[in-house]
Image 1 (tube, helix red, strand yellow):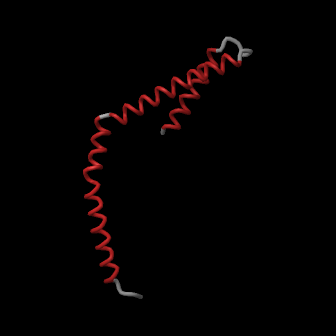
Image 2: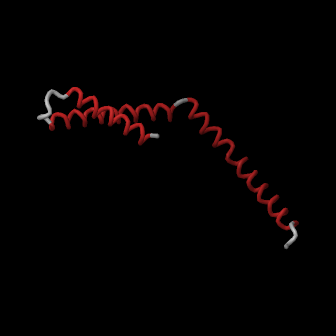
Image 3: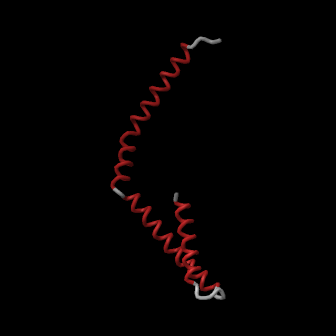
Length: 93
């Protein structure tokens, strides 16, 4: 998602700068404007992702995963034991 968002923002920046270009004979100015807009878009995307990472919902999700990791491990061990017993009970053909 990050890459597609940055690509979309970069394409939008290129189109916006192209529309605002005074004359097609100024490629250096155009490149500089595109770079500036791409940097701004990248900074905005990084800021948005860091806000999401720091959000309360993300923190709760990380805490839930941390709290339930041991339970998941226990369930996997139980499942392996059950499958092993089932495998032993299955007659060979």
